[in-house]
Image 1 (cartoon, one colour):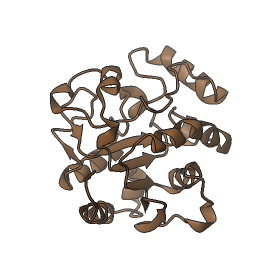
Image 2 (cartoon, rainbow, N blue to C red):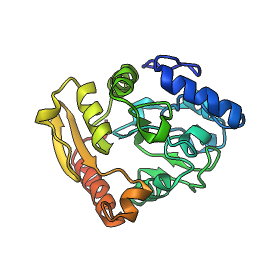
Image 3 (cartoon, rainbow, N blue to C red):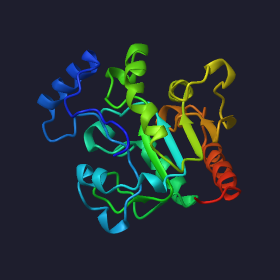
Length: 234
């Protein structure tokens, strides 16, 4: 790995650590730990464990990075793979497949046949927060993993940030002031060699309330695909 990863028993954020300990007691078969990034692997490796896949990943293949907020309690915290096990993953992965950023069948479990093409997915906060709400201190603390993860992707060209908090943490991870790179749905900004695309989060709440439609979400990834088509695939 070219970047540090939190340990399974990371205690840098005491509130999150304690919350995970409770859920290890409640649901001992769940992942209940910091959720690793989801990176491209060979399709024949897709049925292997999340831990094994992290060792077989290809960070040099990543041209697009998608950054979410944090694992959902019964989603990624349960399954150990970002956006796997809840509604947000249904919309995200169907969109990624539509624009050829993923292939295989998404069955909302980490041993399905889904693999990523040219992209990776990570959360700004690796551990599940109570009520899906990390504190500012927790977001800042977990940036020690987000920043080197971004810089550890040597061929990265574009980032999609899902939601305001993920967007702001990404901008700070890149060493830039949020005031100069404000969040807005389907808004683009440039930082060095990276093009940043921001989107409302693909949560069930946002889609149920009409804040985000599937068409709006897909438009963001259409723009990403169009942008990458103008760039050399290094």
